[in-house]
Image (cartoon, rainbow, N blue to C red):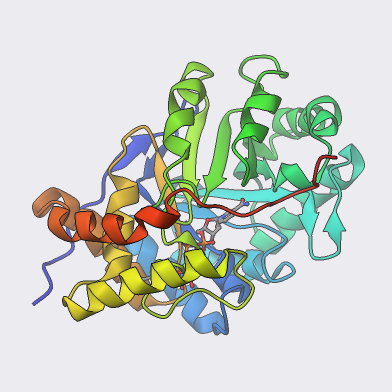
Length: 323
Ligand code: NAD
């Protein structure tokens, strides 16, 4: 029988003072990024997450062409609790129509997002996948525009997101200290790729809060496997599938192991996992709380790491290719 779900851990996000549940709710599945999800299931997932102690919710106007923000907004409203009991991040600069990191677009973007989310402010506004824009524009135009939005009270904190890790050092080395509060990295702190680890001392020295997303490597580390659009090589996909099958044969669950692996590093304030059902919320929260009660299954983890060794830290290209 499954153990009862106990309390989640909360961690401080850099110098923001925000205390985030160490499991965060990734709302891209609510935009049907990973397949069909009804609005009712989306709202129910948000409510169950909050009920079990998750207080951090992440979305973007890009996910499902604004659908994720709309469903998350409805889910948060249905909580019926004071606004300061949950923490919301959304993003700007990436849309289904394409990328636009201009000051004009991101300034308009936050008002559109707030309307869809039915909120007066977000806690974090991220520049979304900055490797697809000009990093110099991010430094000289986008971030100053976001600072004005911060002064206007539309966002409390500013963040940047993307896949390649060197985008973070490029930007953080070029903005005044304290300008960027948070970074969101994805697919770089999971069993198959832990390259974010090397950057943690630098990020801490800059005083930025660290959010790690996609502990299941966007579906690679699940029994059902990744969506059609997943950008990984077939070599990486098939190694992850072998690891998932191995766990299943042994009566173990690769997603649980992957969640626990990502949650172990306390320098990472929160791990954002995309969830589309009450069942997934409960499984992921249970994986997190069992870390305290039981600890990680180190034998199976070592076996999975051995299966994934040939593909360890393999990633894929993202962004505007430099000539
Ligand atoms: P993920 O690694 O969290 O995997 C999500 C997939 O795993 C979905 O299909 C989900 O339904 C499934 N899943 C979740 N729990 C499961 C369980 N217990 N068992 C089996 N399957 C399970 O990838 P993600 O959703 O891309 O990342 C999490 C969140 O982080 C996103 O929703 C988004 O909010 C954020 N994110 C941001 C960026 C960015 O800013 N560039 C990039 C990636 C992710």
